[in-house]
Length: 318
Image (cartoon, rainbow, N blue to C red; front, side, top):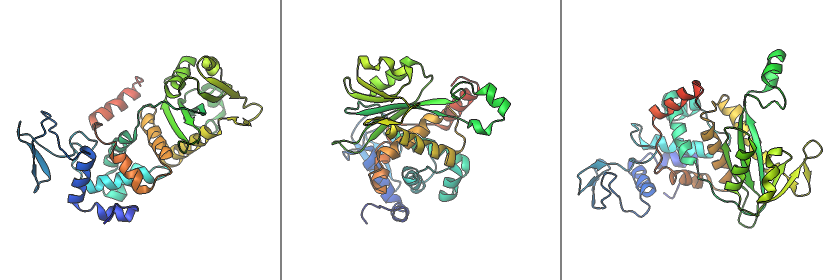
């Protein structure tokens, strides 16, 4: 059977443990030469009956899951692969309860699986060229759901108090392909933070479109900066941020409709998940799955670390 392109084909294809093992070997060692995680030696023997490897130098036995998001997981790879497929291809995400029912695990296990898969979907910062858009979104409870007295105290001014800022930069569609976006959760909305975000993601001298936020005032020193005043209009010819606003609508639909309540200290991984799906929207379901699988190596998230992040967040550290 060729590489699966639909969910039902994927379930059938990856039901074979040998196929899953071959997929892991391909993802972990693209050159087809296993390396010992202990001593780095390439003289490796294979224990085919157990789908394991053994280093001929230090004698350590290891599997292809070592050094990936699947390391130390007792779950079989067929469940992991279906979970990866669902997360990569569900446009508005998939909740831990839904994933638990789909693959037959408990809800806490599904929640842990989702965070590990989101880690594999994260991509590093890269420099964009050509026309770009920059904007900030705020993630948090809706003011209209608060009592009027509480709203007046908790949300003064623009209504961003108590919300988490997420900054995004979008490269418009051009000769190099469809629009691409990068986004990151910010600790604050200080001018220095926004300028640093734009300058680290957009090449010097490129055109950047923003709104009239004062934080972008000094951007003209390094880029061609043009802004639109949203109090009067949303676009003046090519001067607008409608592209990145479209991404914010997709992100907020996912957060409000599927995940409902997202803690600020976990928000970065949810943003990375939506960025991945947006940037790979022109690919096929099978293509997105393989892209995630290429990102599983060298990324590890243990339950202890995940809970430590959560505890730190509740104590006000994050």
